[in-house]
Length: 114
Ligand code: 5GP
Ligand code: ZN
Image 1: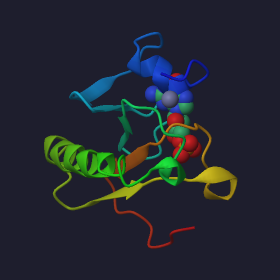
Image 2 (image 1 turned 45 degrees about the vertical axis):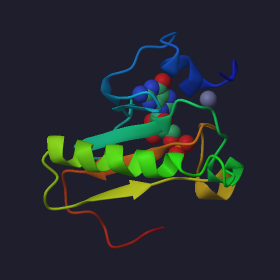
Image 3 (image 1 turned 60 degrees about the vertical axis):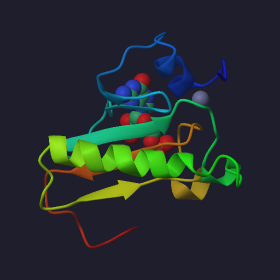
Image 4 (image 1 turned 120 degrees about the vertical axis):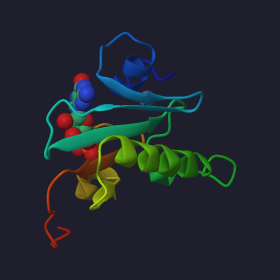
């Protein structure tokens, strides 16, 4: 746990969240400022600042996140599709420095990526 990290505090239960998925490695909860009808944040319980902090030993956690995303997409009836986004660093628009994937869906998303 990183004591200065908002998402580590959510994992520790020090800050409340609307949890939608949890296993030993992963937590998922609703984004507090949703940008779509479904907007879920999927995070590893281990703290990594971003994709840039991953190593060969830790990168497999992104696979666990993908499997959680797939299960959540089914539960939230996103049969028509959805988007997974991870922002990295200042230019990437990352505001919380704990690796997370946004699962966004429930509407026809823009073709524009930036
Ligand atoms: P980023 O901009 O770093 O990719 O995404 C951070 C996300 O975290 C934002 O979409 C923001 O709305 C969300 N967020 C920030 N603080 C909280 C919080 O306390 N609870 C929840 N559930 N989401 C948060
Ligand atoms: Zn953290």
